[in-house]
Structure formats: structure tokens, C-alpha cells
Image 1 (cartoon, rainbow, N blue to C red):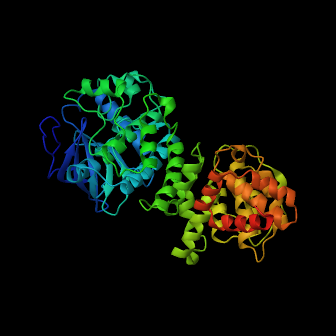
Image 2 (image 1 turned 90 degrees about the vertical axis):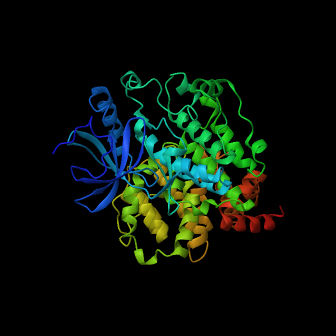
Image 3 (image 1 turned 120 degrees about the vertical axis):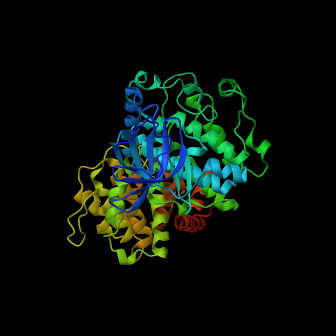
Length: 503
């Protein structure tokens, strides 16, 4: 028997195609959400059903389908996954991942405000999700506590890309569906004014959400949507530190930059935001209020260092292949070493130039070729050797330059830390070449401390005192602090070399 969409206020107990409706979970502006069982696979899903009153309108149906296409393209650990988009028994639906836990709106009703450690963790995971969305040119447009799910196992997932749109889509075809897309409490000024939005609008909404999580209430309030909107346009929020004294200054600084009125004054991408959060995580660990960057996943290291988010596009395949890369050696202690190595490797995923041929070497049969350059890099991290790092260029001669830069850093670290004895002469030309990259030449680059510390160390050990002193002069106090937080082994070698140089 087909279901009359107009007559069905609650679908609990019904069957729609392959799904048996178990209970109602909630409702949004366009859809009802149900917990359902997918009969063919015996799993529970969240079934999002277009509201009956809207199902007859072709414009609403088109928007609903657009939402599904946009969201289904985003496969990421921090994004609610779409399983199926369908139409059965007169009902348009989306079957998606069911996340056991609560959304942050529900958490706030219970706890009022969250501790800075949890807020930093939420920021990190949501930013990683937005990096993935940026690859597909998707803007969420409705980030708020209710759309951020906190799973029972601690994972954070972004839900409801229902207001997302492809950046290339004509806005007229979408904005006609509703007067305003987004929630006024968290909307960016440009979205309120009806101007074009990009990833910086999502950064703003995430910033307002983070303010709410820390302060216990949004920075702006009012009795009407218009009153709230005008404050987003014209009012300056009270500093978080004045609302809550235990908020770390570094976290407050990040949040206030996110909610700048003018888009050009915010973080220009989720990747840039994630890079700053990585530095903040180092501060949080040192100050004892949060987890350090060594707890981050490889995906987050890559996204935080690559403004183009190129690396994230390869991550899924890389992780699948990792299970085949000497799995017996992947133990917690080994994982910690790998993450520390990934920290230095990740530093090079910024603006890069052209490949250089100086590492081209003779084929080494003992290193197996992997299916991608990223898998080859991952293999070298797990089983470091000169041959393993050189194999990246040898097996993948036409990759982008930044892939080779990763191998360069890995090779330097092998010569200095992993070889039977340090090979300073072999490391020197690689470091010299790295020092000429755009990333290393930037005063604020996180790569710069690694490169110049390395040049100081190898030149000192090779008896090139003047060159060692010149490299040491490039390291200011901030760079030394960065090195101390992120690369203890290089920092230790640098300290020893500076002692030999009398500095």
C-alpha cells in the first residue's frame, strides 16, 4: 500500500522501500528525521524524509535532491555519511549514518558551557570536515550546535548539509525556496545581507558556535530574527575572557578572529584555521588544558598544513592501503613515532614550487611500489630507509612538487635520526635545497625552524663553522619555541651544536 504524503504526520511503524521506520528523532525546516532499520543490511540508519506539505512542490523537491547530491559527495570521518537517496511510496528520503550520541545543542541544555579542552577538540574535528567540504566546493551555510553531533565514543560529526550549495550553482535557484538560508543566531554578516558566501562564512558560523560553547550563550541575542541579524552586522561581541575568566587567551584569540565582521579579516579557509589550531594544541598541551598535536590524526596533520587540501583527497585510499603496509609493526609505540614524524612531514604541505631532480637515484629493487605516492610516503614512514624515501621520486616521477618535498624531509630525518650513524654530508644538500622553497623563506613558516636547525647541526658537524653560525642566526626565539614543541629530537641536536659553537 502506498503512503499518502499529505496524510502521514508520523511515519513510525511504516515501511518505505528497504526501510522500517522505528521512531521519530526530530524535525528540521524541510524534513522529518526518523530512526529506521535498513532491512537488507540489518543496520540502523537516520532516515530524513521530506515534509509531506513540501513534497508536492517541485522547487522544494529539487532543493532536497540538491542537498543529497552535495552531502553524498562528502566522505569523511567527521561528516555524517549519506548511504542512499531515494523515492518510494510517495516519499522522498535520504538514508544516512545514525550517530549514537547528542548534538551540541542538547549538550548545552544540560551543561550550559563546555570546557576549553572539549571546545578545542570540537573545533579541530569540525575544521577537518570543512576542509573536506572545501575540496568539493561546498559551503555548509548552517553550522550551529544542533548540526554538530558528539558521538558516544567521542567523535564529532557535522550533520545536515541541507543548506549547503555548490559554489558554482546559481544562487537564484536556491534562495527562492526560503527567505534566508541559515540560522540567524549563527549566520555570517554576508549571508544575512544576501551577498555571496564562501568557506569564510562557515568559519564565522563555527566561530559563533564556539563562542556559544565557551560562554554558555551566543554573542548576540534578541526577541526577533531581525534584531539578532542587525547585531551580527553592527555590534561587537563582548570578549570571551570577560564572560568567562578560565578561557585560555590563545583559544579566545582564535575564536575572535573567526567571528570578524569582514571576511578578509577571518581565516581564509578551514585549512588555515586548522593550521592555527595545530599551534594552539601545542600551547594547550604545554599549559595543561588540552591535548597536544601528537594526538591528531594523519588526516588532520595533512589538512592543517595544505591550504589547497590536496592531500586530503588522497587520504582515504592511503588509509586503506596502510593496512597492507607491514601491519604487524603498527603498534601504539610505533604509531606515536609515526605521528611525530608526520608532524615534520606535514610542515611542507604549504605553498610549493617545482620539483627538483637532485634526489633522483638508481632503482632499488627491495622497495615495493605502492599504488599512490601517498601510500609510498606512508610506507617510508613505517619502514624508513634511504631507498624507501628515494622510491617516492623513482616510482612517481610526475607528481606535484610538494609530494617530493615530503620525501625530502623524510630523507633528512632518516640521515640524522634513523640511519646507523648520522650522515651529515648526505643531509646537507637536501636541507640547502629546502631552504630555498617559498615555505621555508617565509618568516612565519613552521618549516623554517626545522630547515635552519638542520643546517646549523649538519654544518657544525662537518666543520663548516661560519655556515653553522649563519643558520643559527636565522632562528629567533619564537622559532626555537616552535621547534621545542614540535620536534624534540631536532631541538636536542640543535642545542648540542649551539653548545659546540658557543652560542
